[in-house]
Structures are given as C-alpha cells and as structure tokens.
Length: 385
Ligand SMILES: [Zn+2]
Image 1 (cartoon, rainbow, N blue to C red):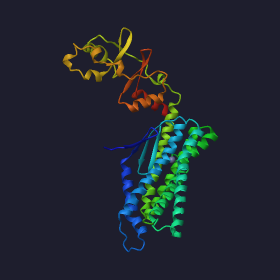
Image 2: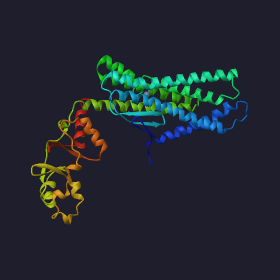
Image 3: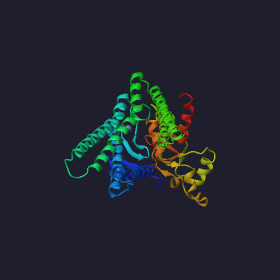
C-alpha cells in the first residue's frame, strides 16, 4: 500500500505518484481553492467564502501545475531516450517530480542536453501561460466581452509563476538539480574528469542546500514565516540527493570496465545428479562453507543445489530422494555470463532475491558470483576511492 502508484504510461514510461504527492495536492487545492481564490474572485466581500467556482479552479490549477512538472520530467526523458538512454519511470512526489534515467550519460554533451530540456520546457510553458495571462487581462480591462475572465486570469497567472519558478529553481547550479548537472557537464567537458566535475558540482549542491536551510531557518525563527519550513525541507532534500548522487558516481566509477569474470569466485564444487540427498549432505554440504553447488550429469551443467533446496525436503526422505529431484534445474537458474559487465550483475541482484548465481559459459559453470563477492570487492576497493 505504500506506493508509488502507477497512474499512466507515456512514451513507454510508467508515471507514478508517491504517497507524499497526495499531501501536496491537498495543500495546494486547499490554499488555492479555499483561501486565495475566494479572496480574489470576491474582492469586495468582507469574509470571502469558498464556492464551487473557487474549488473547481483550485483543483484545475493544481492538476495543471503537476501537469507542468510532468512535462518538465518528460522533456528530460524524451531527450534521454533520443540519446539511447532508457527511462523506466517518472515519479511525482512532494517536491515535484523525478525521472528514473537508467544510466548516467557517458559524455558531457549528452548530460548537457538532457539536463537543459526540463528548464527549457518550464520556461516555454511559463512564457505561454504568461502570454495568455496578459492577453486575458487586456481583454478584461477593455471590457470587450460581457463575462468575467477573472478565473482564467488567476489560473494563467499561477501557471505562469509556477512554471517560471520551476525553471529558475531547477537552474540553481547545484548537483543534482538541472543547473548542477549543467555545471557538471561544463566542468566535465573542460577537465575531462567526471569524478572531479561531479565532486565540485556536488559541493555546489551542498552549498545551495545550506543556503536554503539557513534562509528557511531565518524565515521561520525570525520572521515567523512558515514558508521557511518549506525552504528548509527542500534544502535537506537537496543535501541528501547531492550526497547520494556523488556516492552513486563513485560506485559506477569503481565498476567501470569490470566484468563478471573479474569478480566471481572460481572455486566451483560439482555434484553428480544421481547421488541421494543424504549422500550430498554428508559428503558435500556439511564439509563446505555455505555455498551453491553445480549439479552435473554426463559432463553437462544441469542445475544448482544449496542448503535452501535441502531445507524443502523432509529429513526422512533424504535417503530416497536424489540431488536431481531436489536441485533448481538449469531452466530456472538465470546465470550470468563471464564477459557481462559487473554493473549488470549488480542490477541482477537488485531485481531478484537470489544470493548467488552461477557464471556459465558453453554449459559449463566457470564460477559463482553473489552478493558476498560484490560487497567484498566494494569494501576492498573503497580504500582507493
Ligand atoms: Zn529537471
């Protein structure tokens, strides 16, 4: 029940909303439909009350604001897809939206064009809604038509400001905001060193976060302005995202160029398929460390067996049941290939709950790779990061 919930699919990308998104939609609808719009729609009333028009307008404006956030993220995604980088999901949450772009760009120019698309879309939308707002305001002032245009003027005015703010905030030069990505792309292009470029863009992101938190704290504590809470929360969000983005870059750098065969353990213990489970337990499982065994029959790899397979068979059947009956057969094992990238092996373990998988070439098990080997490699490698 915790979400995020998928609400649509556009360009092959799942559009989801996070639980926190409902909170911000509720806050927006309330602030606009019940507080701001009644006042502006009935400026002469002593106590303006929310009515059908103000509430409907509040809902419509909020949805269009999130449509704008979505358009921003879709623009990034569209460009990523154009550059051959798949995008799997866009999630809307309390601070806006985030597109899950499957890989980091491998060139500064790619990073630049992907990062610039979002703010460009927001600027374009801001310009469009600004022009519409101006146009309707002129018509209203000139009394060209009999009906009041106030609702549509309010709507376009908020979307003009909203999209403008979205563009400007995202252009702030701190990683991982769009502006920070542009900065990183620029430094990367100049230095030809993605690590150093990310480090400095991340520092800029942390500085931005500190400024946001300080301004928020000032507003809240000195001016008793609750908008400060919002600034501070966004500041914490930016701080964490900057740290996380940097950590992921280091991780990718550590994995760069590595293949499965460089990380796997080459110690492969084989078991004949025909022996009984009891014999397997006594002669293979008990004397060894906790591991997966490769089951062979007639010189070919037939499946894997580990203590978890044995657990599923009642002890009294151990002498009558064979390894062949107990193993996980080949067709249910999703093996890795030795020349596969280490990154793809990580993705494999992130997707599944397997602990260890065989590395198979020409139907022969050449090694095993598990979470254990991966984390050991990272631990040993960390010293050099
Ligand atoms: Zn963006």
